[in-house]
Image 1: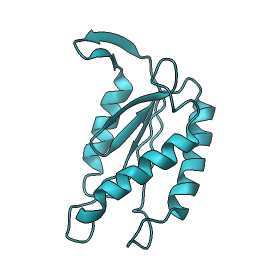
Image 2: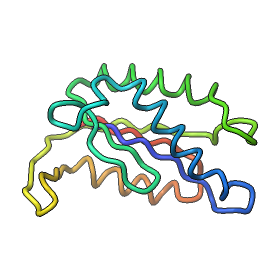
Image 3: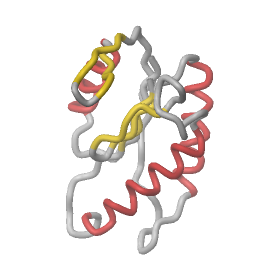
Image 4: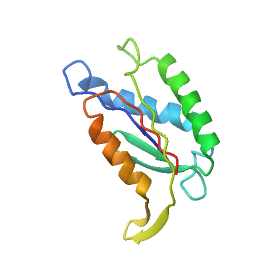
Length: 134
């Protein structure tokens, strides 16, 4: 599973740009992760939630390659009225995924999702891109 997320403390300089940054995050991550134009399990796109985009990949090497390509593109990306995109971090994890039927459709659970939540709490207030491979 790959999770992309940026975080930055809300301040007057970044607030007007959050939508632009999320759009740029989606644009770059969808261009770097294979089959990200299709929803999992047919593709790798899992969901977008707040300022995060989740991808699920089968192979750790594919996740690592996509993460490196994403980072290169992210640091070279331009957003109107900003010098550059915020700094980011990548975390890669893996674990089994189980499917759970919900009224909104299939949802997935895994210890890796819990690891993401723990890592996210430790990085509060820092700009970051999080990616987790399950």
